[in-house]
Image 1 (cartoon, helix red, strand yellow):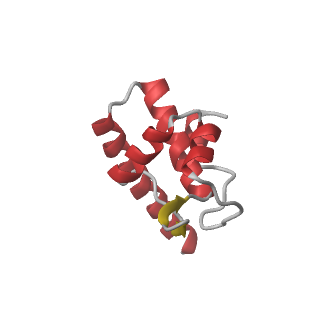
Image 2 (image 1 turned 90 degrees about the vertical axis):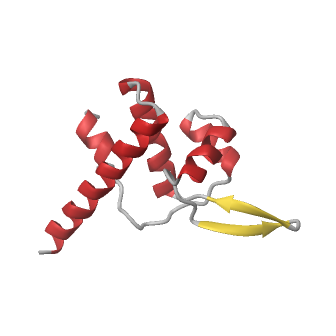
Length: 107
């Protein structure tokens, strides 16, 4: 897969939920540490599909879109050497591009 296809999420349907993942499963699937997943969540770089109560404590549940976002962050960090500030900037810009592409498709 080329950079453009990976960064744009080609082949994935936005809003289509096919699975639910815990923090630990997300980390394993994306090759990240659980602490990194939580850090990206706290920074607003990935979003949780839901927050559910498990044994009296809140737990985050992530979906396929969250996994795509996490993998994209890892890709940008590993291949382009982006810092957290760089990841925030690039993620924001990619989000805007995706929104604009969505608007164009609806026309």
